Image 1 (cartoon, rainbow, N blue to C red):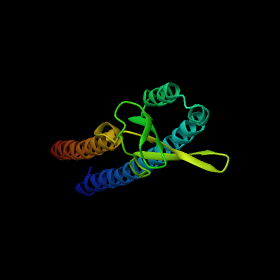
Image 2: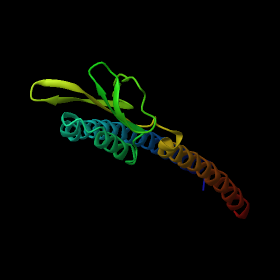
Image 3: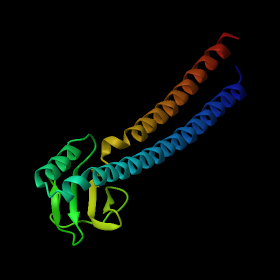
Image 4: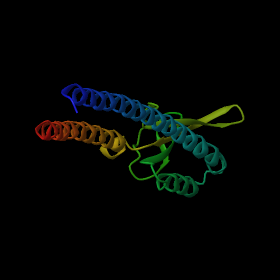
Length: 172
């Protein structure tokens, strides 16, 4: 092998590494965007479901059933707390961790749906999801490690290629 061939192999390896790094980064961003969209759909759907389920017990003034509904919703996977609030923002019923006053929905961790019977608003249902943690960013860290390993292996193959090239020159 000539020095030119070794340099071409190294350049090809580094170019491949760069392309893989770009592809891995793009897939990480796509994954994050998909997770955010799923999270928004999940939170909104749970808030709407809680609001629909709470109308009958609210009209019947069944506080125990309302509390049971919110506690069951709070026990679902990926839910921090769930609560029902009146029109003034006071909590009617809520799972563990629900604030006494209704927080504003932010579309990222808190979602709400109105409690409506006929044409009359009775309050709102609020569902809170936990904030994203470091474990949610796992694929990004995995992709970074994979990219680093690719760079390391490319440099290692270049070194091995140079050694083989030197020995071949000595044998000639």
